[in-house]
Length: 354
Image 1 (cartoon, rainbow, N blue to C red):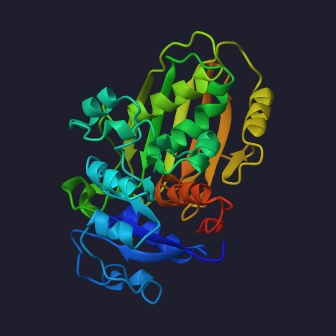
Image 2: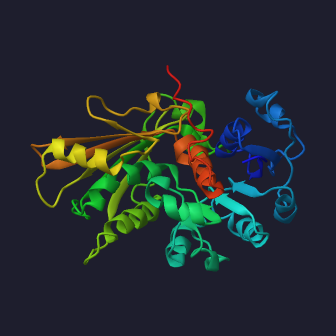
Image 3: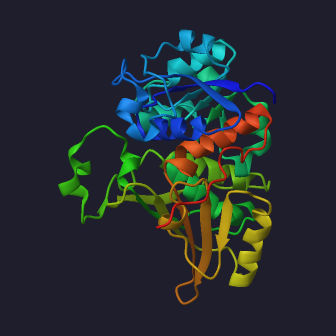
């Protein structure tokens, strides 16, 4: 393309929003025209995030969706859950491409959304237009839509580590147990007691056991993968326990399940290689185990599949950076598809190590 896409980023002072600004500032096809923050309005981006000094000359402004739409061709919204409903609707009314990083348009069942997020959905008519923004599963639909609901960080890892098994109808769908650990940035930038250094350091804490709001998102997408096989498919029910670990960023998700029939591990790994053949951001591990330290700052999802032969369980492990493949990077990957450019544009940097 000859002209850069004018983009605006709403909610740019949170961790995911700041990561969007960082990645978009270096994107060869993007021109950032506006960044918003209710808490930091009037402050320069470089004052709030000195790491972006000399790269992003903008000043944070208050969110006014209609005015924002006049200055941008595409809009990323990194607002808190339940706060994106109206801004998304206004930006879509203005005919803009929208990628929403909140959960407000991820669930197709409005009743499920209202149950899990404890708030009415004011624009359920847009749910049919929203495409779940996981390119590895919905690439063609993302390329054709104007509204993407970008996945949550935990679901990104969980869905990608289990999708090949569900796509081949191999899983007993009521045996899925997911044990996931996230760095503290996954809780957002707002101050809260559990995230203070003395509370989180040298600690490992499970939370929202069986109640986390990402559960219906994971179940929805795994059911969708399974149902594409046709035939009579029962509901997918998972047991999901997230944990907070004392690191800045990264997710390690370990999922356990039982198969409908025995299958040798080499065949399972061949199945994964076939399912993810050509996927730029999926890296399969066989001689090692995924670890968040190897994907920090990158848009990769590292996946491994293993067998506990004695107990009869299949174990999959996935690692993502919760702020990149789990948030900002994946949102940009989707926007690239919506623009019709190579989806890896601006996202090819490897992880930082050590």
